[in-house]
Amino acid sequence: MTSTTQVTDVLLDRAQGCLLGVALGDAMGMPGELWPRARVLAHFGWIDHFLAGPDGHFVVDGYQAGQVTDDTQQTMMLAEAILDAGGDVRAEVVARHLVDWADRVGASEGNFLGPSSARAIGKLRDGADPRTTGSGGETNGATMRIAPVGVVRASDDLEALVDAVVEATVMSHDTDVAVAGAALVAGVISAALDAPEGAGLDGLVETGYRAAEIGLGRGEKVVAASVIRRSEVARRIAEAATDDDSFLQELYETVGASVATSETVPAAIGLLVRGEGDPVRVAILAANLGGDTDTIGAIATGMAGAVSGASRIAPDLAGTLLSVNRIDPLGLAERLVTHRR
Image (cartoon, rainbow, N blue to C red; front, top):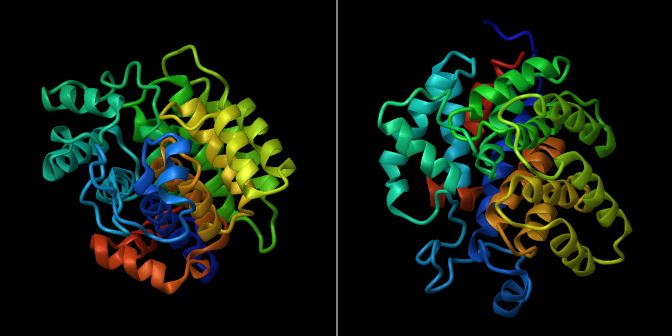
C-alpha cells in the first residue's frame, strides 16, 4: 500500500527524534542496567552523560560510553522488517528478522535477551509457527522495539495501529498485558507525529490509553496489573513531586522499574511527563531511576523524541550514538515515514 501521509519537515524531525531517542535513552541507561536504584546512586551518583559499562557488570561489562543494547538493536531490526515488507507489519517477516538478528549478534549466547524473547527465538529456530511462539510473554521486549510501528501507522485508526502492534509482537509476547503496553507506547508515538505544533502531552498520552484499551482485547489473558491505571499513578507522581530525586524514588518504589510490562510502561510514562517531553532530560531521568534503566530509557526517550523531534537532541550526543554504534536511525526513520498511513 502507498502512503497517505505528506512527509513534512516537522513529521520527519519527529520520526527521526523517535528512533534517535530510543538509542539515546538506551545508551544513557546502559551502565546501570538491572541494578537496584540504591546501587545506581552509590556507584554513579548522578548520571548525566554517556558512561561505559561498569567492570564486572553481568551484562554490559566492556561496553563503551554511548553504546546501545538489544533495545535499540531490536528497534532497528523491526524497522528493517517493516521496510522489507514494503511498509506492512507482518509477523512472519518480523520473526525471520528477529532470528536473523539474534544469530548475527550471538544474542542467545549472552545475558541480554529477556526471558520471553529468548524462549520465542529458540522455538522459531526450530521452525515453529510465529503465531504460536509468544504464549506467556509478559515482559517488556515487545514494548522496547515497538517504536517503528508508531512511525508507520497514523493515530486516526487505532484499530489498525493495534493490528500492526500485534503483528510486531505476537511471535514473542502474545499476551494482553504485553500487547496493551506496546500499543500504549505506539499510540503515544503515533499521536505525537500527528499532533499540531504546541500540542500538550496529555492528549498524546490519552491516545496511548485508548490504544492500550484495544490491546487488552488481544493476546492470551494473563494476571497482570493494568498498564493504564498504573500509568495514571505514574503521571500523578510526576506532577506532584517537588524535585527529580524524590520523583524517581517514589516512581521506583510505587510503580516499579522491573522487566515486567506492567512496571516498565507506566514508569516510562511517568518519566515522559516529568521530563516534559524533552528527550535529553527524559534520558537522564531514566538512567538514574534504577532497575531496567536501558529499556525504560529507550521507551520513554523514544516517546519524548517523537514529541520534540531530533532537533532537540544535541548534535554531540547524536554524533556519539551514530559513531559508536554504527547505526542509522535517522535514515531508517526517513524511509519508514514514507510508508506512514
